[in-house]
Length: 533
Image (cartoon, rainbow, N blue to C red; front, side, top):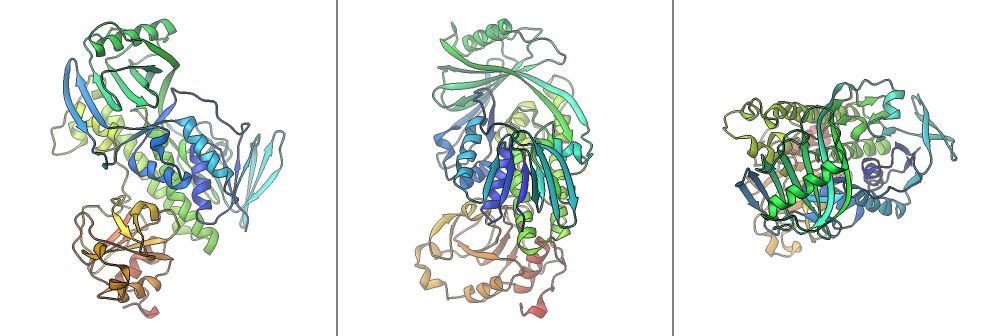
């Protein structure tokens, strides 16, 4: 079968290629450029625990060695600290890393992956779809025709794929602007991010009253100043003056010495493609959506697009297309990003001094600072990873379904599990292989050798039920899971979202949930004739 064609060799395109290779699907990545990305220290990304874990799985590299995992977060208003959060060493925390470093790690992993071919200097020119596949033509030094089973446009804001498919991209332009500087200096705190609203030294005019500081490796920092509405020119002189003023304010004296590494103006647009699928052609990342009013969210959501789409394309590539499964990519991801855009659009007036934010989180009295903190830390309405609660793949009417601390459709907690070979691993380490995960909660198993409990109690019956599922699945065991009682069974999608939690071993319900997850029937009892009771 023909490979999947991926247009665009940025972080989202390379992530998708590696995620498909992990599931034995070959890809061709059409790279418009020469095959490398120029370093830009001021162009960075803040990765939440789920997307950081995704990149670590695919690259085999701990991101802590290339970025900074925050040790804490501080929010200030004027001269007062209004909140301060410290992360424990084993607690998931955001990772701040330069985007060119991310691309370099992904390119290195792709170079070692025989199922990934990167075609440099290949600019997409046309797309032709047929019932059996897709043909893409590229121009440039390596211009030629490429034949693929599917094509995914990961080619950014000005996506050629989106334009060739005549997909509208409505939204708002220049929702926010930030003046950005990457510099090396010494601040009164280390490895801790800061949001400072209405600093007492703020000047009127070109710069608004909000600045963030995020640590980078080797004593470097990225500073972002929110600019007021309008198109006032940010001159080098104005930016240098603001750097000195800000550093002096944080150190209660003269500005410390600093080495300016990079500057820029980051403009935020909010746009959402009308369609994310057109036959065998899909959109992902900035080609499908633009968001990120906090200056950091866009790449996170693009990586989640790749994670969601990879296992569905892999299933179609190996087992034949299932339209309901492929359609669910747009239904799930577009709904999540649209909700993020709505929440952020509601928040912007409050951030700029007008209106309130309390209506975003019903029943609470959170202020602006608390909501913004949640957004920066990947929590709440502005930051938490989306849950596919209304997914067309969600099973219905499952006998024995129980609630746990993870809502149905949300990303699962990363607990320690025992794999089928008896090894102890993290649950997230088993994701992205194209298989469903069946997790039995069995207190006490962690202290016994696997051979003593693998054939005891409910294990043989559960193992038989897992073998009979309509999609490949892996059986895992955990001593505990937040909110899950002993002997409950959790079904987890290949991208780490919870399908259901069942009380005890219920083969028929488990089969029905698994079949719904891969786009099949949704009524319990389906598969009873296959012998799963």
